Length: 252
Image (cartoon, rainbow, N blue to C red; front, top):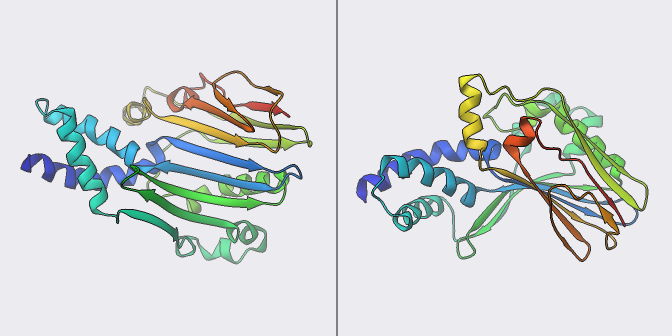
């Protein structure tokens, strides 16, 4: 297994650079009755990277068992982190002065927090960001800010994916999210084909924590209703190809 370990050590760096763009993504919205709340978006680096790494390594070492591949990958993953991780990441150094010196943009930046939280024993390592909003209108403003400044606020690893406009609305009893895909993902390009293969098994999950139990919800892609929580899951490749909508509406 020595060669296997060496390969994992080299490849893990490249995969970690990609996981923010290609991995399973979870969005959580904690909504209070007055429209305030918290928005989180994160990805589990361990499960996402493990899936990609094991797929890559199994093609190179076809005789290796799944357990042996998993052991090597997990050892390499956690070699870079302590057994327990709960930290806030300084994001300000990555943001240009044009944003930090603009009061209309800085007001969103000041309420944005990058984090990494996980446990080797529990087998997860979530990395992402959270934003506390005073109203759904402010959540919409933050989303627009992130979209307009994605080149300055996103990872250094860029992917030529379609632009998606997201809109939120809330009237005290109904919350909705609608999305508009400006362009569909063109799978004819060889580079996009590679990206498509990475996204093939990737999911996007939306978890809504509502102030009251829901009375009516959008049924498409609904995974679970549990008390005040509503969970949806989408196939990323279908979303980017325009084959699956991520629009949701919940009444409560």
